[in-house]
Amino acid sequence: MKRNLMMIGIAVAALLLCTENIQAQSRVARRTRTERREVRRDEKLVRQPDPRRTQGAPVIVEQRRPVLKVVDNEVIRAFDRERFDSDRLKMADMIFSTGGLMTVGQITRISDIFDYDSNRIKFLKNAYQNCVDRHNYYLVLATLDYSSSREKIIKFVMEEQDRPYYDAEVVRKVSSSDMTAILKALKNETFDSTREKLARMITSGSLFTSRQIADMAKTFKFDSNRYDFLLDAYRSCSDPQNYAIAANTLEFNSNRNDLMRKITRRP
Image (tube, rainbow, N blue to C red):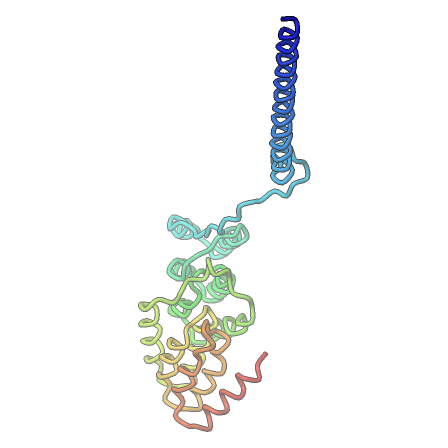
């Protein structure tokens, strides 16, 4: 009997010991899994730090497109209220010095208000760099009383040709309606010499496609004048890879070859 009780006691002790070992192993496994989760969580925290607590982290600033500061039409009426050209010029200086921009339509209306061509020329020169549709700047010539004054503006615009264009968001694309008016103005010129000056003035104001330049070149009567225009207009081409379209308007093969050779040599 005693022997049986002793055997039962040993069996119970062994069972308790085994249970304790299993529980201990279970605690170790749970602790190991918990530690692994904490390590993974810590790794995530290291890889993805909280931007609110991280010092010295780069700050990403959202870049916004520049807002065009085209003046309100009420500004034109303000020019009309001034009695003297000198005061009108001061008003223009104030507007342009603060980044104000104007359309050719607005510039034309203001130019008409001036009393003297000499002051119109000062205003038109000042306004050119603040014009958002410079490809239409030839329209301001109609506000000048004398041909010599028009020549001065044309010369000024052509000299400004090497200056950088406005940002693409500022320079307006040449629309089909713009091209219709441009071609009409070129065709109305009697001589190729004056037509070339006007065409160079127009192309210096914006970027044109090869096809638009080709349409302007077709208004010339003589191949030599057409050649001179195409060589100069190349710098205002928005798709130079298509300039063969414009070059193809030349009648003589020698002029086409010479044009292509000179364009190829350009940097």
